[in-house]
Image (cartoon, rainbow, N blue to C red):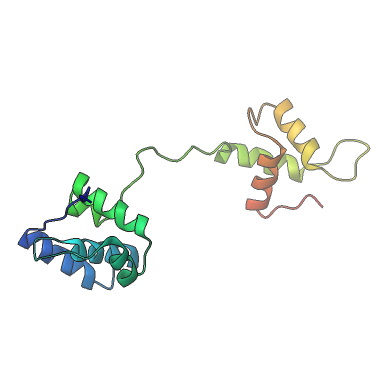
Length: 152
């Protein structure tokens, strides 16, 4: 069966992979990727099978496949480094100003007839005062927990 991703390293790439593999300051994931690429190199002779490489390095066969595919698609430098995500993480629903409003209302007197604020009442009040435009009581609860505030 013909291999889909064939690895043939140049001398500089091989030297770079050996440096990465031996650098203990880097994460084990990156070092294992370098070792996978070195073991799959056909430039120095017959390379090992993916199952053999997986056993030697201590990773799964799918990790071997993904590493070799990444090497063939984007090169050794990008394969042996961490990649930033394409999209930034979702922005927070609650900003600093909103947190200040939540704290102010949570520390204020509860409505008449109640001994203390509940998360549900607090959420309704925040939406009524337009401090919180979107979000749920779970958002308010998480914010209170993050700020170490208790409604008791």
